[in-house]
Length: 153
Image (tube, rainbow, N blue to C red; front, top):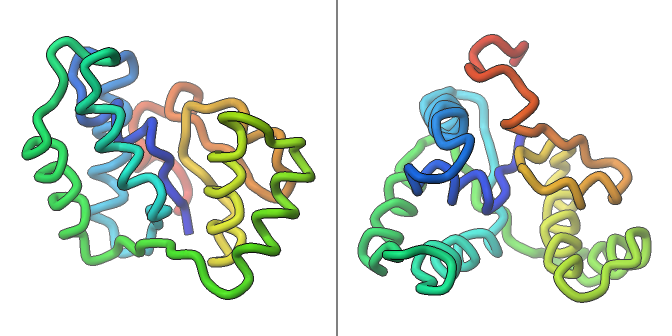
């Protein structure tokens, strides 16, 4: 299963972002494919925080636009929301220690921990910091083929 990081959702949502087209193609490919894909629950709130933030975008997305975009993603029959379970605190601590996750990197450790808890080993992202975490294969929309359908699934 591939999990999708917040930045891919942001790039797919905001047309002015670099790699917008690749992000849209990846999200559509995953959403329309039968193969399960995951959204870490933390990324839902972070997506809304980023796209509605007036200091990040001018103009920012409205709350309704952001929530409608998420609702569209959640309509995919193959999406799985990755929630923390009983092993999450231990996995978070391990992930944080492994990457010496301080400051903003602690948020990435949360995503890695919930992915590990659900057996996810691939993360679609543009954030190079995830390379600091062992056992997570980073798939970058910037370096992957423009059309994900060309990848072996």
